[in-house]
Length: 53
Image 1 (cartoon, rainbow, N blue to C red):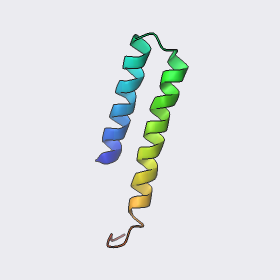
Image 2: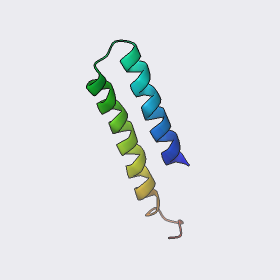
Image 3: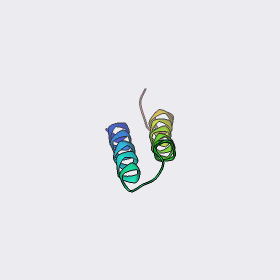
């Protein structure tokens, strides 16, 4: 569920920044970083103690 929220937030930030006049690529890179962090945390969460695989 957290990954879905990270992707959604990233895309919303991309559209808002693009609408406010930022370059499309720059806004997308910020969104991509947010999605990458969300995916990384999702993968690493399975390795935390107490989590079953």
